[in-house]
Length: 266
Image 1: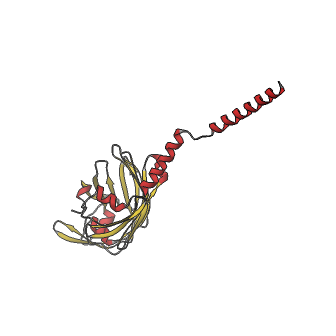
Image 2: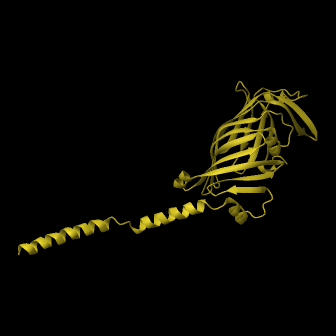
Image 3: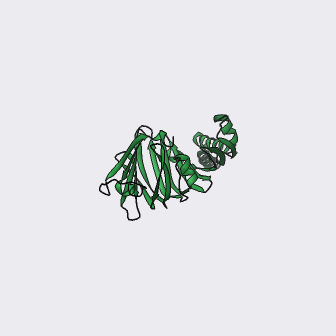
């Protein structure tokens, strides 16, 4: 009887050990997670050139694509400019159900870097900084720009396809100089002082406040959710235009223009 009891105890211990060992086996959820991580790692190594040829075939603005989906660059041209766009994906943005990347743009003396994130019906630009040279400015607005670059600092934008502008901030600084622009079929000239632009959100409109070095108002630029552009220039700014003889208070908006944003530069 004693021998039988001893064997019974050994069997109970062996059964307990077996149960504890089986409880440590990974479940189906872990295997599925591991498989998804492996597939994601493989997808990130897909050549960027293959993706460009697959989804953007015969793009006339793309000259060369290199790297992988994870990190790569595009050399291209358009609007009289040529440049390089480089990216590196940000996996942490996936926790917010967004596809994000650190991006750098180079063209001539233009250098801009920041973050881009694409979500459901949303586009976010975060922490953009750098400078835009005169050639870049001319491609957007075909005027005769002075050599002074525009310095960009801490620029951020949030656009929602259904709700419009959701957030905006940042600062632009321009050194001023001689500017040539078309007006009523002739070329007008103005020697402008250094200007500062402060970006913000004003009643669901993107607002760029134009100020001089003493923070006096020089003008305002607005873009609404329908992408209509509103420009207001004050008497203070117009006094820098050659031949201007208008009379008004310095903060009075004496020029107002409203047009589609898409028509800018045409």
